Length: 294
Image (tube, rainbow, N blue to C red; front, top):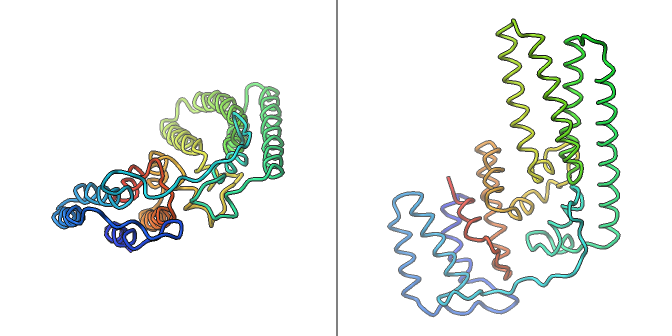
């Protein structure tokens, strides 16, 4: 189903929908509905359709007076870490989150404790790996061979990806490992200072690495494709729509076109379903705008 059709279907879906077991209140201004429909029909560009669609969906959700048609979910108290690791961060994402299934919205103290323990254990692995690598590199014979340098760079690349996936305090390990990596790459450049072709390859590889690491610093990216994968396949869409609009946009840009269209449609359907159940996302309009783009 295309994005355009989802916009149109959203109007009919919410008019016939139910909230908390009660029929949605009847629209007080039928002329406004007619105006919005005409505005949609006259839209000539994707941008105009987007504006018309957002206005229509907002009207259906909030009504003529701009009042919410559904209650927000109640919250419970849980003590979260100031700098949570990847597993605890995912519990925070799931907790009381209507985009996830009912059984996944609850977080027990035992589950939280286990997540923190695993995050801590993984952090120690990353920290110890950094110490070990730094020692190995420091003990390499001088002058170091190109083979030694490439091996060190590869080990550092793997550690950086692992540490970013672990999240929390381990991200600082990734930063330190990246600093050591810069020194190693500088030494490789010096070793090939007279070979223009190889220097160009080194520069391209280094640029790719830095761009790859930058993307991995987004928790959802690390959670989906990182070494320490946290997000299950069946929760990719709930995890996506739980992000802020800017992050949703970045992640969509990383996907191949066909996959992006599928993800946009699935995310739109989930948002509409949750709206029908009565939850109003504080960033609803912005998220719909990102998901509706072509």
